[in-house]
Image (cartoon, rainbow, N blue to C red; front, top):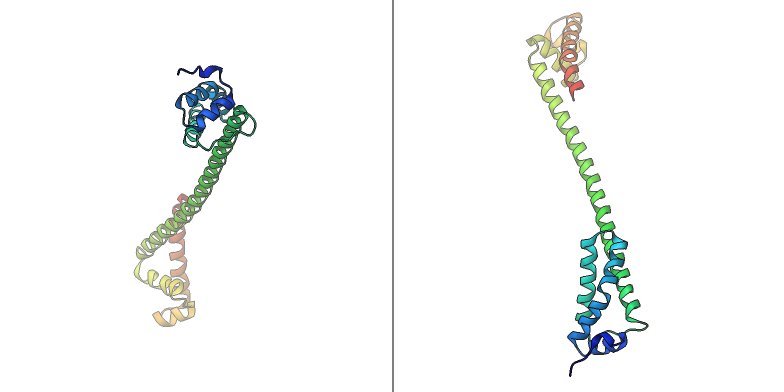
Amino acid sequence: MMHDYQNYTDLDLVALLNRGDERAFTEIYNRYWDKLFTTAVNRLGDIQEAREIVQDIFFKLWKRRTKVEIAQTLSIYLASAVKYEVLNLLAVKNRHRVYLQHIKHIQSDISEATLQQLSFSELRRELESVVNDLPEKCRLVYKLSREAGYTNNEIARTMHISEKTVEAHLSKALRRLRNSLGFFIHFL
């Protein structure tokens, strides 16, 4: 027996759908696809996402066909489905955006810390290079003063030189470091 599904009411179509009638499902699809799609596009502003949401709604409708119960009208039922699917998608997109911002912030912090560590390492290597290029006694005075923590008096006694000579060597070392590292620090 051939049925003219276009003349059936929504309640009749739902009753047939509950029994697994594919033609009833097709009629529901044809009746409501454009309206649901338009609603989804208006709320999302994205044609592809709207298409996927509407397809998903109809997929779920067919999957649950034997359990579908319509409290009011099929139109309200499907409009509510679009509303909830759009809200769910927007919530997922918002969580994704927040997560990406969080990751970007963490990466920025890590990148900044890494750059600072690299800059410090570079500075230390450059400092060692400049110190190693100092004349021998000047280098020894600098290392005893800055690395070993000796006072000028202790350096003078250890190296058997006057405190004035220690001060001269330190002044020379610090001047050379300022001249060499000043550009490097500015560059960093």
